[in-house]
Image 1 (tube, rainbow, N blue to C red):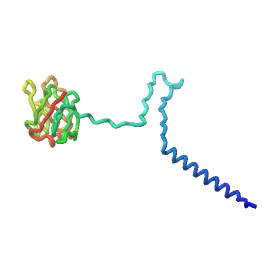
Image 2: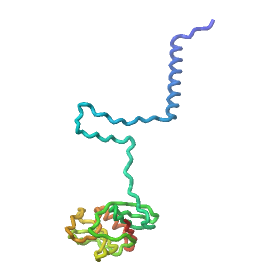
Image 3: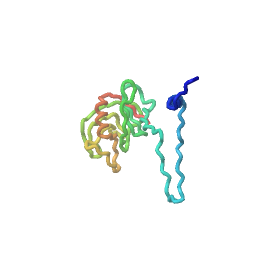
Length: 194
């Protein structure tokens, strides 16, 4: 006659079997596709204000802002690239990679698109608008003979309105002025693009 197993043995066996089954299912689920929940905008309730605008929802997969792309046809090699339309400068190393980019404040007049180079550097001076400037690097003249160059205000301020005066200085933020000064030796190419 066969011996009967005690009830605790049956319960233990079933528990071990159930646990093994749950683990096996969990492993299979982890290797399968994972559904994502759709974002559903809540509908306004009857008590909601008629003039209330819907609030934007946060993206489930936020993307970092992309770095502005170096303009095509801006040359090759180590250079400074200035985009008139984007009001932006790129510092480009010898491999053609942009190492830094920043926005600028152009003057009331500026250079024509073309290829130039740094012709004169001055540590400090006074801009045609009367503002004390530093890190001055000239690279061309306007059609009317005004010097065009990069600089930053010594006090770090943005340029005031020109009040009808012709200014050709391209103003930079103070830290960007220091970076450009360190990068742009005499004869460094400057590519001006639209």
